Image (cartoon, rainbow, N blue to C red; front, side, top):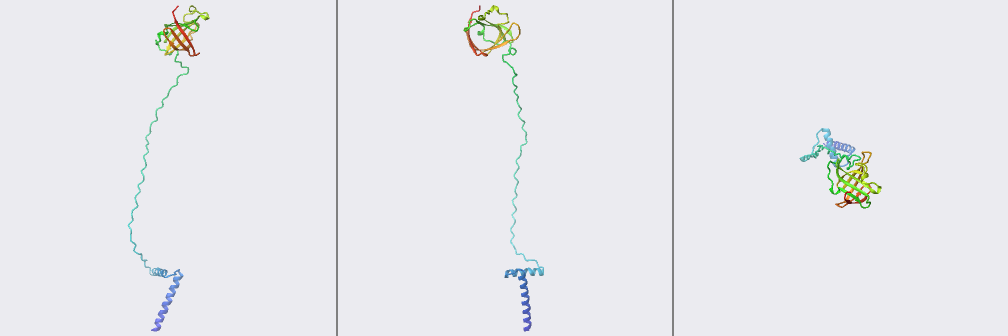
Length: 217
């Protein structure tokens, strides 16, 4: 009986020694590692499924649903471009005193009608009449006795005669000639006009002229 016990102990010791050597060969170096290794080997040899410790289940919280940012609406309404207004330039050479642009029967200052004599050059005479020449103009005439020209020397509606009209304080005169139908324009700006005095500035020379009213010869 004693021998049997000794034999069993020897076999167990051999088995333990072999298992320890096998475990050491597989990297086991402490008791916890030996226990884990033994369980793994037992499961490998027997095919038993490893025990899974009970882990309390934490209910999953659904991730918040992210709503996409709304895309701003694009106003595709097309606004018509404003209509361009074209301002036409005045025609070249336009003259507001043109003989062809005057209205018929244009008003005039009646004080201008009469016979005037230049104060600085007494031989210079100007006569404005009410005789209508057409197209808004009236007839007038002038002569300069310092140049040996008298009223009797004038040819009717020829040299020395002029057509005139008023535009505010301006007087346009179109001098006539004996041989042609052309007119030479002169513009005078009246500075003073009364029963006795006429003062104007000729725009071309900017020279001021003073006349006094005289009785018709």
